[in-house]
Length: 291
Ligand SMILES: [Ca+2]
Ligand SMILES: [Ca+2]
Image (tube, rainbow, N blue to C red; front, side):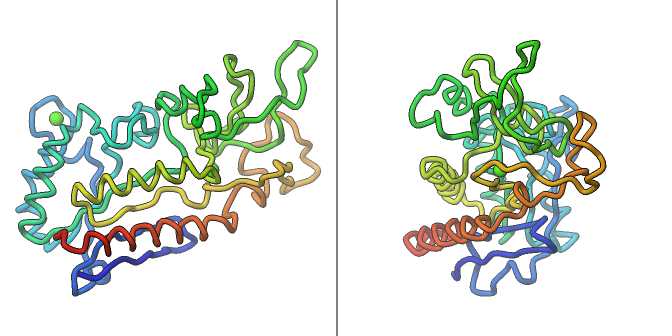
């Protein structure tokens, strides 16, 4: 068994860390089948595709000569953004199956040598995630798990003014006011998807614990979601407008800004490398585990 690699496809839109590879470096020649679970195969008649549905179709993948499956998020999530707003990273969303279903699926896949890659969403989680709820309440160490900033000021109606001009990819300001904590939190995507503070060592450790959890379940790799959005400028400077004549008004969107402070920041590479080294060590330590 040989270890790991990382692959950057295009401009890191699609990034994978493979956590285990057999002596043939399966990831180099593997034919990958991406599955959006909800619409793939329903096993129990409730109209929603599920993990057992995938297991029922393993023969079909063999016929197609598929070597590996890439599962889009199956974690406990809010329905917002199709599973990309995760409430619990080590729990299966109940409508998609149970942990036992996941274990059965991976066991059957391993029986025929198939590999499993799972989606890994670590730029943000769901605002319903317990970590975020604790962060609102400033419970340590969760108080620093997300990107919180004071209002720049208040307008004449008493409304808080966001710290800078950063925009959400999904529209509007990238800052959402939280009435309880009385601060803004930052979100690259929807307001229900607060960005993690990926410079925080405790957050990094949580991410490593999640990696370890799923490696122990038998997964062979992670497809890392949205790495280009991982880091933002620590000085929170305004981003310049593409067209300076378009004043910085309310109708400015994410597409009107030049993303020199919120997109493809250099620290991404260091962080991915850190995860790479972590998984390498973990694999070495557990080289007896057959994956
Ligand atoms: Ca179902
Ligand atoms: Ca981010």
